[in-house]
Image (cartoon, rainbow, N blue to C red; front, side):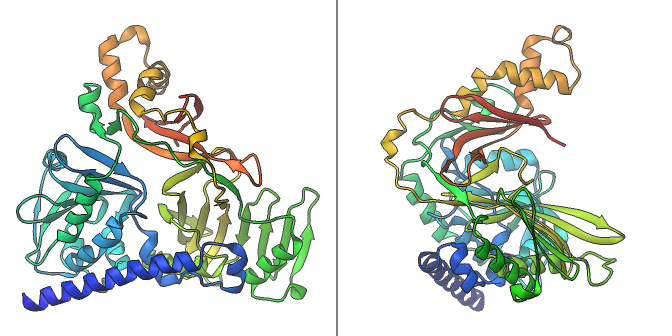
Length: 477
């Protein structure tokens, strides 16, 4: 046990050093495409693989009545601090495990705790490897994938719960000491934060989603610009040289009538669209008949690090299995945050900010559309409106939500009891999150719009967070 404590202490020390150095890295080398031309490995592939699989939402439970949510970890380092404990527990073969019910896990939200939510189910083995665990222990054999991790921080023995919504694995370890995270939670509790409450209590329906009743503060005012200066031909040629690793004299250049530029070398193609979307294609060098996610993620890490660098706060949001001409691979989709808030696109310029088709050691397709924070100093007092809570949004737009629910389920308003219908509609709310919406109308000086994103049944709605206006809705595929 003494050796285990020494190992834990050393791991904690390394994490704190990592946090310090990471902050120094961002202070000294902010994300900037121009500097990346000279320093293409601003963030190493190893760092990216560790950092690409991370939560997109953080639930902090202080007690039965007080809860809040964060979308970023920049200010508190909760996830960064927790990774050392996860690495330790993943590598151990002496943990105590038991399965618990979904109801038990839900009730534990009333205890002092943190829940880390991931954007989708991630393979448990891959998560362990991303934390630097070379030989994961018993946990990966008992739960194949997870989409959330619960840390109990109350009185008594600490423990961690790994869950995918159906299976819930409770794990104890004799050398698990979470005092450092408990102290961070205490500091957050003493600060100003927005209170969230279960819909089950606020709207009296059978739903475990949390919503805020009143917002404690407004979102920062943010203006963005395209990452790529498509009107600068020399800059575009520099990008082509990065992708093909050849001098521009050996690369064929075609400027299309719409202003888009094509670069070709052998069978590889790079297209830089006038709207800022970059597209790259490279044929596979050999058949890939067996897919390997770990190899594919490492390949992606290295590729991103060496091709224009990695935007700050980028995270993996979706993993899809794909097949192309008999070759087996993955489509990886990445999102990112600006000032701690996730960003979504309002136009079909790109499906998402970064999308990669990877076949083990080979990148076949790559799409990138990145917008950078212009860091314009704005007087926050100019935003005189108070941000609306989702409680207000839901109440004021219930008829719209009801209409969509009836259409999707092919129901008639006359054929169902009004109160029963309301229960069904509100119970079908799957997720609520605060995001920035990028209108994508301008190459620069584009103001992001704060929105509440509601996933209700098969539909997604985006409502302006300040006036409640519906900005868009879509039926999920």
